[in-house]
Amino acid sequence: MLARRENRLNDLDGSQWLYWTDTLYITNFPPDATHPLRQRHGAMKPPELMAEIIRFFTKKGELVLDPFAGVGGTLIGADLTEREALGFELNRCWVQIFEEIKSKYVIVNNKIVPRENAMTEEVRLLRSRMEEGDCLELIKGIGDETVDAVITDPPYGCQHYLSGFKKETNFNMFNPAQEKDFGNAASFEMYFCLMADLGREVWRVLKPGKYFILLIGDRYRNGEYIPLGFRVAETMREVGFRLKGVKIWCNQATRRPLRPYAVYQCFVPNISHQNILILRKE
Image (cartoon, rainbow, N blue to C red; front, side):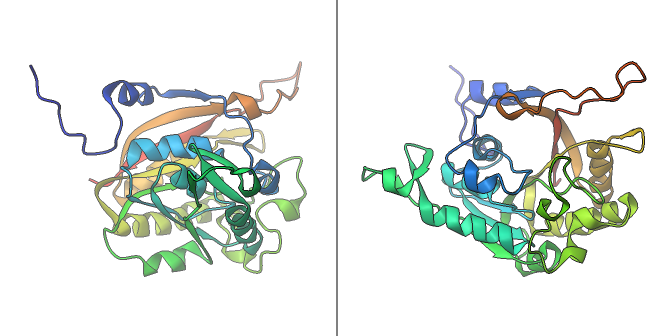
């Protein structure tokens, strides 16, 4: 009988590991209890999604860093999976929303519930931390090779605003440091330079053999498809990371309806997926 091999990456069994290697990643996470608060951000990710990613790339008790924490989807996911987590966020509005979530919600049976509905002793508090400020500055305060995983959902290129939302609600609301927002880069070239700056700091703080996970949506601009995920991956390869794979993610429960772009004229894609870039420090 073969001895069971040591799992050096996570706490999953073999079947769970195999499932997660599928590059097609279709989920069906409905809005969770914190959604009414988090939806003000306009580009938040389901905490359950982030929890699945965290479970694969870390073990319980390990440290996860999110340099673009937003309203805390990654941090909540870390709390669901009993990992330590630290997030950086430039926009004070989103930090305040996350702190409100921490004060109003708890974890019961691995689910986020309103604190007033937690009628059991088996309650876990949300313990992840979020710091307000520029990620390129804040990350300098983290020691070399002390982080077990960096998992983040950065802005998707220059002047990244979501259609259907007012400009001031797209990552800039009440933000006194808009010029430092990666989403406000003057050009894609400047955006890639900023991402490279971050990548070098992530390389420094990550432990050897650990992973840098980026959720990146492709763009369509001025009549041309921009494979932003590929270009960010190339940027991180130049920093030194090795690209280990890409998962194509779409959440069916919150997927936007298809829009009739250029019907009867030409092909314009409905971009309903996002790229989960899997990079490793080797």
